[in-house]
Image (cartoon, rainbow, N blue to C red; front, side):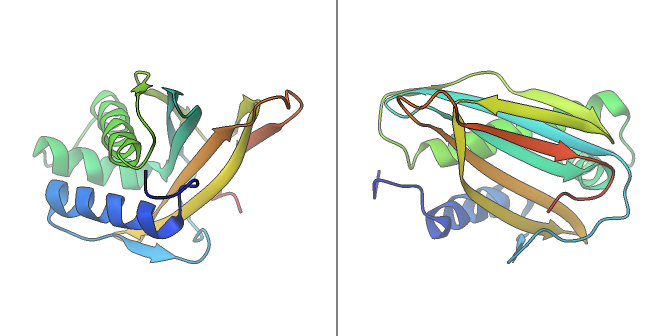
Length: 167
């Protein structure tokens, strides 16, 4: 790991390399989450355990996930199952890219994907340390990095999705 904390610039570099390799395209990095008219969202999450404990969460509009599924699978259109599978794989690939910035050893859990328009995802004992906001084909993607804080079981962060991109 290059520093004691995951820096935004390092995460940008890791995700940009992944994006270029996977999609031969680049993400547009934003200062804050962009507005979205899509009423459905997908949230993919992976926990990392080992020398560093935390979670990586990707939150995207359903239209973003559909575009990614079509690109990843070479389809003209993708159904809900393919879209969720692609979001899980993107979460896995992104987490793997970020894992290279972390101290070793560390292990990734399999990805979980939640789809909907009104849900809350809670990470007890984890603190949000970085959030990266992007856009691809005018659709939002947020990458949230949560880190475990030892000795402070009261920390709790919620990711709330209510039909519009949360701020």
